[in-house]
Amino acid sequence: MRSIGTVVRGIRTPIIKHGENLEDIVIDSLIRASESEGFEFNDRDVVGITEAVVSICDSNYVTIDDVAREIEQKFGNEDIGLVFPILSRNRFSMILEAVIKSCKRVHILFSYPSDEVGNHIMNPDMLDDLELNGSSASFDEDRFRELFGYEFKHEFTGLDYIEYYKSLGKKGQVVAHFSNDARYILQFTKNILVCDVHTRFKTRKLLEKADIKILYGLDDICTEKVDGRGFNKEYGLLGSNKVGDSKLKLFPRKDECIRLVNNIQDRLKEITGKSVEVMVYGDGAFKDPVGKIWELADPVVSPGYTDGLVGRPKEIKLKLISENWNGKGDIDELVAKEINGKRSKEYDDQNSLGTTPRQLTDLLGSLMDLTSGSGDKGTPVVLVQGYFDDYTVK
Image (cartoon, rainbow, N blue to C red; front, top):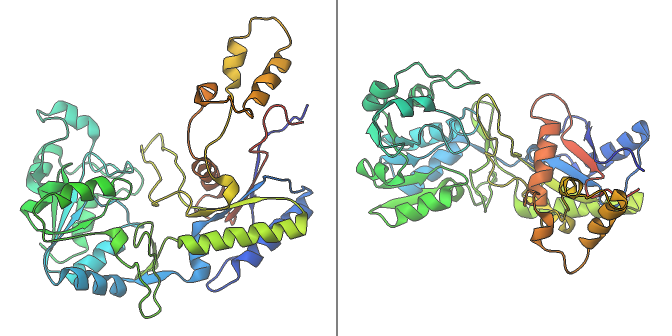
């Protein structure tokens, strides 16, 4: 019996710079790693490429001024309401700076006790001690401070994000409001920019039924190529990251990701003779046990992947077989019979009882994101081997 199942390797590459050929870098780095570490490629290995280097090679950037110009074109020089932004210096502060440059006053509607990915704006335990109707109350900053004070700071950044976001504008230019009902913002302005990521469709649907003047989302901003700047026609500013003091890196474009992964798959087939799957990955899904933060600030885990990664795992829960074994017969033969049965037409969701029904790209992307990290490991490429092998594969 084989002693090792899934193996995950972070593949080191040279420092990747604007305009470089990412296909060549990925393939050369994989081949060099296999030769130096003595491993071979197999059918259904999975190669992951972090989304950041895709956008770097494509020079998919916009500046604060690019964003500010488009915001002003869409809204005019009026007050704007920002609904449910993420609490992040990296993800949202520069977008806010652009909005501030393009309008008179900015009304920010904060959700509480946290944003949609788990960044807390207050101590959630305090809600239990107050005579509030759960988290359905709405209030201004004075009332918020009266209830929750100034003591709470973000677990990792040490910031009071209310004060931080206000500090990006002139005195009185940025006004904070608090509610989990998006319609509360309409008491202050009818010009709305929806800023949440995964809940944006629900938020937008709710606002569309209300009395609004102008309504856009972050996924409507920077969707077209203008004067050579970056763009993302599907996600706009969603998934963007701060780069330096005046520039944002956009989430990679889907069509370019699909072209990249298919080309790499074809070239690896020519070189190795193996059919390898390839995907571009962004944020995975991991909840930090201390800060309670879900990563997931990108609009999707994977913006592009080869056809073999479509769908969900088709698995049997081994521990259920073991726990229900009556001691009769060989358990390995029983396991092999059950696993082989999953390949039959009779297999259905009941057979996978106890397994998590997630998309393959979401599972793999989470594994890859945790492997590569976002710091100085120097491994923007990840190779996963044996992921699709089951207990019967020798």
